[in-house]
Amino acid sequence: MDLERYLSEKSELVNRTLERLLPEPEGYAKNLAGAMRYSVFAGGKRIRPAMVLASTEACGGKVEDAIMAACAFECIHTYSLIHDDLPAMDNDDIRRGKPTCHKAFGEAVAILAGDALLTLAFEAAADSPGVKMERLLKVVAELARAAGYAGMIGGQVMDMESEGVDVAFPVLESIHIHKTGALITSAVRCGAIIAGAKKGELEKLTGYGEAVGLSFQIADDILNVEGREEKLGKPVRSDKRREKAAYPALVGVVESKRLAEELLRKSLCAIEGFDEKAEPLRAIARFIVERRN
Amino acid sequence: MDLERYLSEKSELVNRTLERLLPEPEGYAKNLAGAMRYSVFAGGKRIRPAMVLASTEACGGKVEDAIMAACAFECIHTYSLIHDDLPAMDNDDIRRGKPTCHKAFGEAVAILAGDALLTLAFEAAADSPGVKMERLLKVVAELARAAGYAGMIGGQVMDMESEGVDVAFPVLESIHIHKTGALITSAVRCGAIIAGAKKGELEKLTGYGEAVGLSFQIADDILNVEGREEKLGKPVRSDKRREKAAYPALVGVVESKRLAEELLRKSLCAIEGFDEKAEPLRAIARFIVERRN
Image (cartoon, rainbow over all chains, first blue to last red):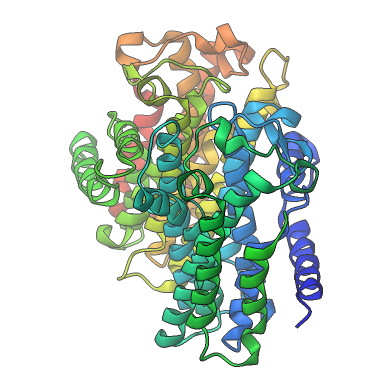
């Protein structure tokens, strides 16, 4: 299993589809379209779309059926970064080595570009002519729940409210599960739903997604301490500066790494029963814990 | 046709459903839930939901089938007001006679409350067990298009970019059609889609929605010049102060009123062929042009 090749092939497909999906920067609101494209094509790794597609494949589904849902997840992810970076939120100037959206286009356009990407995600998710309508509706509902109050946005608020506060371990875990885990779990679930996964398969993949989602944020926390700014494309040690709730500060780097490894084992264990079509999912789980950016 | 009674009955139904739909302000993200409720229950007239329901009724559909879609439109409308009021956008302190969301909850929570309401809209729109899935998917796609880049958000950007600039009449019309008209037209269309309207009916109702949508914004512009702050619950003459593109400034109040009347006639003409079940739609069209707040 050559993951690098897998991710690069899927990235290309996702980028081609996003290219078609995003509005052209021309005419009356060209600044808005420009800002949407600037952030979407800022060099993201397309991990979430790859997980949608890998999950569909693991369940015997077709990549082309899941490509719009995959793009929807990237739109949601990008919008969340744009809004997180705003002055009223994390006030970040640099993202992926480039000025953040509001630095490049101004705050008003950045807010609206985030709104437009969030909205576009649902337009994309609802639009896959080959897929049964029942499945598409489930994907829309699933995506909305994972991205909304009970998922990512709720986690974001918890995260903000934890700044400068001593949080207990279960609270930190809950923040990470909502802030990062919900969308990743949902990406895996939506891929499976599109492929028509049976209940048992969907449950196993949910377990996989939850473990991978949490390990993703722990790995991010570790990179924020140990990573190098050139590789990450964003400032390191910002968690400490902002007194953000993070694993290394609470349990130390060594224990954080042990927890990430444990989650990796848990995620692989959850999909043990799947055949070789789940190899990409397995490789992605390893990559997420071992990545350097 | 007693419109006051109709609107108050529909408002009550919409409010009861929103009450169930919105998260309770408790637990980890209670500030976020509080901010969402604060803005949703700030005394809005529920015009957009009423139009969804009236359109469903005009096509012989059931109100209960369209209630979730109706609430989705109110969520989108409220989110757009929260984000419009932000310091980076219109920087408004007062809305409906109360502090704006960011004044009451801070800017970060206001941004996220808007995001959460936008996301919730799609969760609601996808969730109407009694309605054919094909129709619900159409509603989701329709809502996303009307609220997104090609509709409301695009109009918002045009509006911002027109501040302090001399715009020609067709540009002003296009701003209003996108900023306000798209969502209202879509509310009427979605009500019809849920009722399973035939193509011809849907076209007529689209014509009605477009005329009413534009007349709504012209009436707003006129109220911004002639209205009284106590009745409107927001500052008057703000368009002039901000040099916003508006009908009275461009063609005068008298001509603006004439145009609004012309649009009213146009909207009534579009649905001439409908029977007495369309009376609420007719009364709403009149109310929108004649309202004092």
